[in-house]
Amino acid sequence: MSDQNPSGLSDNAAGGIAYLTIIPAIVFLIIEPFKRSPLVRFQAWQSIFFFIAWAIVNILIGVVEHLVPSGVFLTLTVMQLVGLAIFVVWLVVFIGAFAGKRIKLPIIGNLAEAQANR
Image (tube, rainbow, N blue to C red):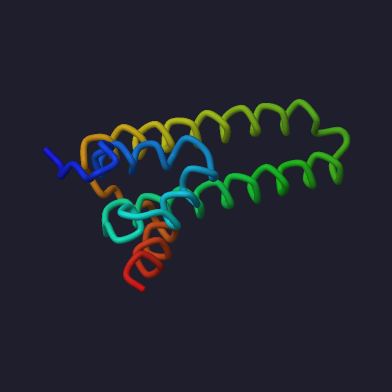
């Protein structure tokens, strides 16, 4: 089990909560004692990069949809599949964080690790 800090919230719980939206991730990077926990810092940074990547993918799909007007059905199908894949990845790291696991996503995980170790 992970260490309890004075706030009553374990590092595992804070790491998992960081994946709910980008806001808790930023909060955990600012407030004590979470900003000193390597696990929470990694989860928070990975969450931030994950949500940024998700937004970029959605924007790119939207751009493709406008460039290929006859491909609306194809684009909607791709959007649904990409959305499902993103949800599954998010669910895996979310549950892993609550279990205290440090699941590094490709590219994003390395960026998060570099930021967490600063």
